[in-house]
Image 1 (tube, rainbow, N blue to C red):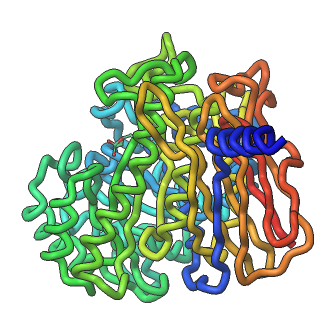
Image 2: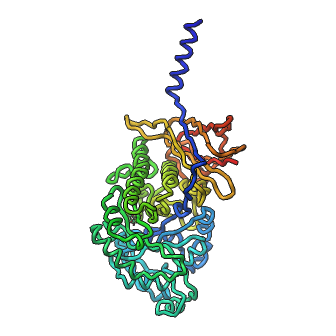
Image 3: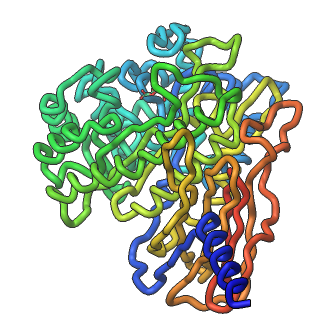
Length: 513
Ligand code: AHR
């Protein structure tokens, strides 16, 4: 009998060992940081069918309902997402763009060649007025990337004056002639893009000086609550870039420093967006989770020069990058979007939330028909991708108070390499609701989580889940609703803890009341 009980105990211990519970402890008492809604920003470059054939179908289009040429269905979908800001016109395109070519009568606008993206002819029919009026329709704040690479300080200063100055000036006069009386009050300005690469192949020392020069002439007309000037930032782990910028640009001239990181299987061997193995999936997730290290290290450098955290880390390009879909222009970066992309979005947004003391703005690349898009279009058809649904589920965190958490996760193991299976972030909104976003990236195993919320009382839990029966599944124009959020029943309150069972490759957002 005694021997049998011992055997049973040993069996229990073993079972517990192989199915260890993940634990999350949320500390509501130490909440102090607001998650800026601008972490949930988007990006629209003149690239492939991002603008033309994406957002913009032209004023004379009678087949697709539009407002001044901008698709109404896209506006509606992005409003539902609560899109906080939109970055434009690039990307690499920004440092080739001369904004004066995109104002005035459309039939008189000069054309140019879009050198970076497919060598196509850009007719400039979508310009400053089109973009800023579209942002008003979307209820999103515009984020303009200025041309430093092939532009001049005068050209950028004129652009700021054109869109922001309400008094009598050459640029405000021109704006009025072009049909817009009052200024748009554009707050967010990028000073060049990827200055280390397509923006001019500069060294950080040279760019830091250029930044100082350009921003000197970007007048703040004080109707924006202060221009928010963002320096072109590092690629991935180029920590020296951030160091040189922080050292050489006075804090009063700097509102944000950018950083770009894309997730892929391997940069030189990206592979298909929809046809991938578990090994390729694992590598993509490893690349996505690297964001935590990148954000932590860039933030630590910024802390040295800016301990008060005045300057924001702006991750103004992030997302998954794969081979283009077969038969499409390689310069258009058109790719499908699977549950793998939902995992990238879920873990990345958790990382941004948890670092929201420093990461106060970010832009998913890119909104429509380009890279990790939230929306794909085909003529009059439009579909929402799994990434769209994650952004929509997570928008409860916008401007909510971050609830710091500690997480102990099981490993997700492939080929003897490990990644944490579970990722999480939590916040409390202004109406008192608590939201917890959870991701299980494990491609095979469910994860049992024991969740303790300290310093908070709640009586009910509800939730939504995004998953599918295959990691490679996606929404197509034929099956647009294959992947969409559903009610989640896998969370139970047991005394002071919450137990949650997350299926493989799933994103869940819980609401506690
Ligand atoms: O998002 C596509 C491109 O990626 C952008 O134009 C550029 O900034 C980055 O290299």
